[in-house]
Amino acid sequence: MITVKSPFVQQTLVAMTVFIAIGALSVIWPAIIALGLSVFLLFHSFGVEQEIVLRSWTEISHMSIIFTSPQRPGVLTILS
Image 1 (cartoon, helix red, strand yellow):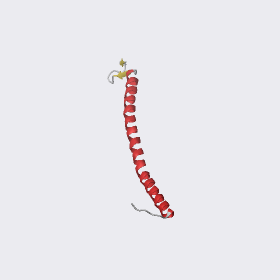
Image 2 (image 1 turned 120 degrees about the vertical axis):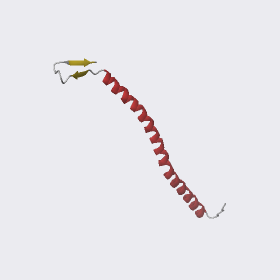
Image 3 (image 1 turned 90 degrees about the horizontal axis):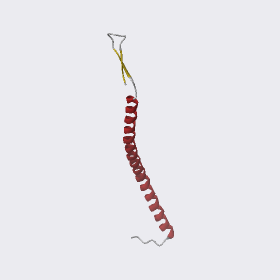
Image 4 (image 1 turned 30 degrees about the horizontal axis):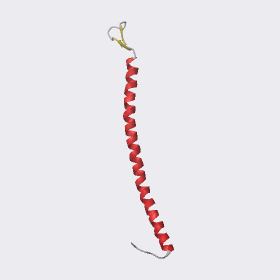
């Protein structure tokens, strides 16, 4: 440990230490925030994907499907 008697030198060392700590945090925190956001969006996309599948399946199950025969244009088959 270095003991410095001058208050100016002590405050300068404290200021340098604070700037180094803030600089290190400014590099680390965006990575932590990005990782947390990406995990959140990943889990959110899994839930949305299942919801889209359920909605599209209910829309398909309520839809009537009409088949026409190209050989006999007067005959229609309706499935619902």
